[in-house]
Image (cartoon, rainbow, N blue to C red; front, top):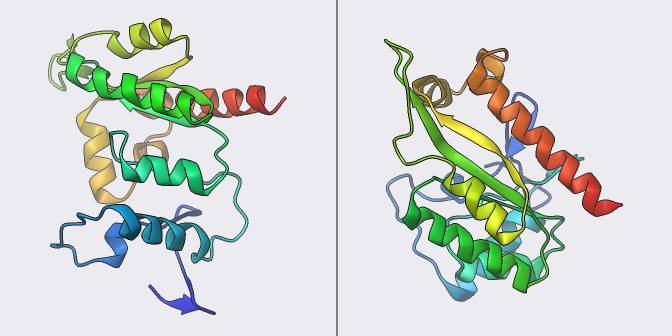
Length: 196
């Protein structure tokens, strides 16, 4: 990363700037930080990156309710949190804890997203709920938060992501791309509702 007046320059692709801890450490290194090291790294990513003008700043957090999550909620004003879960019970337990944590620290929960919701066989087009069906939707209902949408388990998403040409760019009219577009629209609508 080049610096500009001691600010790191984010990588930009398709007009979207991005910065990650993965860019700052050796690719074979494990980032096993806690406490003060986490707080310091988050502070650098938030304040020492030359972001430029942004419509939104999206912070992708690891699953759980530990130091990273608590540090970010205490460090910056957060417009809202999106909790992502696969439909199976073990993942939903983490999602439930995440929603409860954000509520406890007064961060608005924009809603839940169900990832890997349905697998479509590329040969026969049959759809299979590998991880179960509607688990995140049911959890959202039980917690009284919005259900924002589903993201399918689709080989095209993985392939285009690995190639650096995300499906919303390479195949914008495809059903899998439309699931992301629908989801982004739902998040924006929820942010607008909270702001008014």
